[in-house]
Picture 1 (cartoon, rainbow, N blue to C red):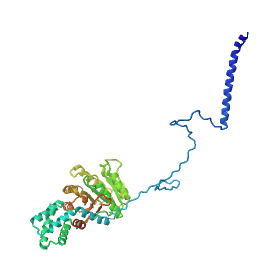
Picture 2 (cartoon, one colour; picture 1 turned 90 degrees about the vertical axis):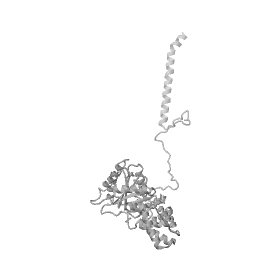
Picture 3 (cartoon, helix red, strand yellow; picture 1 turned 135 degrees about the vertical axis):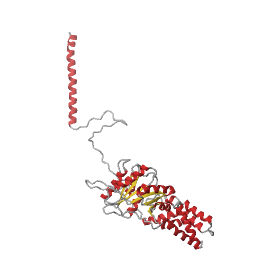
Picture 4 (cartoon, helix red, strand yellow; picture 1 turned 180 degrees about the vertical axis):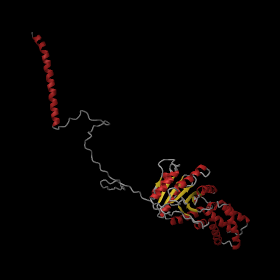
Length: 405
């Protein structure tokens, strides 16, 4: 009887136990929810994050303030609300042309004095026989004076020395100086055409073969003009060499001169030249300097294109105005080869002036005489060195004095 009653009561006992568990769980949940409503902290997790574990942090949690401390030497600009910080680059102050000319004469005297010393030594001999005069002529030819000018100089010197009848160094030097100056021809107009023409700027086209230093020359020439208080615009029409426009822009930025360039490599150089002249007109610039691509004098297509650049660049100018300055950059170390280059360029674009670069790297200063005699145009500028201001106006007297110093 007892066993039967216990068996009958077992389902009831199980039901009561399950009910008690459910009630207990509900009670604990309600207590936990009440604690969270009162703001009581959530109990910490049983295990803390280990090294390398990601820590969960609410996105809206407070962040620590960070102070920005400038490093020593840094300049901190205080900005007003809405003001944008601007950085104004410091501009170079180019050397005055007269100052740089004196410095370049001294450098020229050091690099080309072999020609002057050789001639003075030969002319000061006690006896000037036929062999000595041949040595004098050979010295002139080795200096790239050219056959005709060398022969002319020797004949004139022979006659004057015979009349003079002396070997005094001072008298011989004065005689040689006078005849060399005649050969260099001081009567040639070496002034740069940089004067404005009414409402138009003066436009100068700079041409030459690869490797003569055209782009560098344009940059240095811009410095010469800025030193003379002229407003300049640069045109990067050398679109075949990827770094040419960047190089020219760097030169211009140093002295506050804008550069007109194309955004595309290999763009039409005539188009860039046109845009540069247009920009020069719109900004009332005094001079527009156009850097052209280096080209071989024996490539007909490239030379024809150079003529096109000149024609297109003249279109924005007022009626009757043309490009009056075409500067041919020659490497003085190329000697007679440079002379051949000059002749071809002169046929295409009517060269008005010569820029001789790297004159400090050769004892062949006679190329000045040869190229002027061949083209009938003057050497207007000479470059002596890699410095930013190592470009100066050329003068016949200064050049000869440097040779004989």
